[in-house]
Image (cartoon, rainbow, N blue to C red; front, side):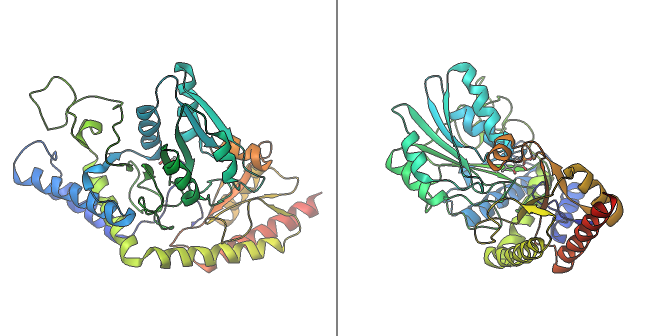
Length: 384
Ligand SMILES: Cc1ncc(COP(=O)(O)O)c(C=O)c1O
């Protein structure tokens, strides 16, 4: 299959991810941080190595500020519900994924207020609107780095400056940017960074990360065994243990480490350049097809490698079905778990056909997708 659904999860993974996970499962997959035997120590070392690699990638000083979760949704829930209390106010944008919007909406039930700043039709954010939305009780600005519907890249550094000036917690959802765009938590003023391990970081599903800046103390969302302070009947205060109860996903985290090592070895600039070239080529070719409407910035400098389109007058799920069945091309259609982003871009009713390109895609993959779309357009027109 030509896999063009990397915004959902990346595929394939670098070879070493498969290799280290297999090695861990077969040879040392004991429970890390619990026992003192060799296998448990090896598992613990493997997990710590991944924390250190994450620090290197995002310019984080202390590996203990990294919390492992099961996906970006889990990280966002901990960041949002762990930080906000009744009476607080949070600012977010209309381009957010449900993993951001739903926890924020859920907190309305306990009296946490929110303002959703509207972006323009291409998903672009006017940072002045963020500034204007700040109230006396605002505690947090929470937003995505890149839209999963239109790819639109958000002005994270500018918003980070506003958050610092006004002493607000700045939460960034890096689900569509980590591994492809430079993220420096210091330079960008990020206090909480939510990242899936299974997309641009090339790790397996079931892995996620939450970076918590030093000095920030969140309410944990679960209590249980941590392997530390076992004499206590209450949750230990030390981090990351405070937030990491239960046996971790050891093979997954070790696989994630191999994925991040791959990203670091290739280099963010090289990965980004490749994805930008593919995005530019796909946009250029799509613009030549009259029947196709493209959403978002339509410019590789302003969007990640996520391209949403429709064939005018046709159902998006029908198009993705034909791409899969007749052309062996995997894409996603409909609404992409971000209803407000669709409303912002005017695609709530039809949804979109979303092509999301990854580092392992080639120009030939894009070419085949373009040829397939041309054929579908031709057949649909002749059927009418
Ligand atoms: C922008 C954005 N945020 C959050 C998520 C949720 O990620 P996960 O599936 O790892 O929970 C996604 C998933 O597609 C996403 O695109």
